[in-house]
Image (cartoon, rainbow, N blue to C red; front, side, top):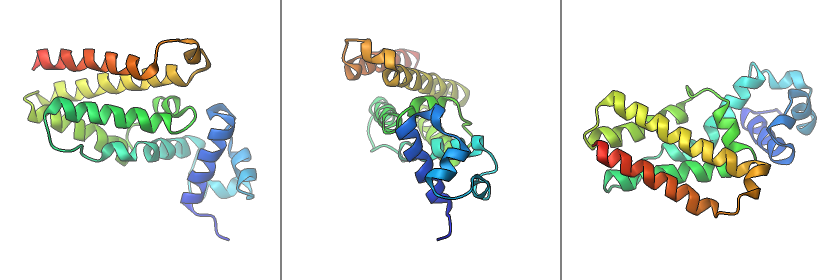
Length: 176
């Protein structure tokens, strides 16, 4: 059977889910897929390129425009989508934080959020900075949530996330 790009991505996600982000090596992935590690480089020139592709695949659902409605509800919808996506894979938030944001889905998600803010009256450069700040909050919160020390925090992570997100939305509302 010929190894396909999708097989490599699926296998890498399985390995990360089983062993964590630090447990992923090209050699282990090759063994997991029962191929020589060199065969993986046909699809991805480096481990970093593979990680970038996994991260982009992970955030694919975030790139879809949220349902029509007020700008703040649309941004909250996108924020929850991103958090769910990051939580959908072990070390998902750390993976996204450590990869490039130049992949198609990552760029589209950022542009979608920016356009929502621009339509609400924000200047394009400020909309970009705002989306960056929001993504930093979401990724940072989720890294903590996925870390072993995050389990020691007794407050409900959903409530903590919504509280912090609400503070950010209130700040954007005041800015607008």
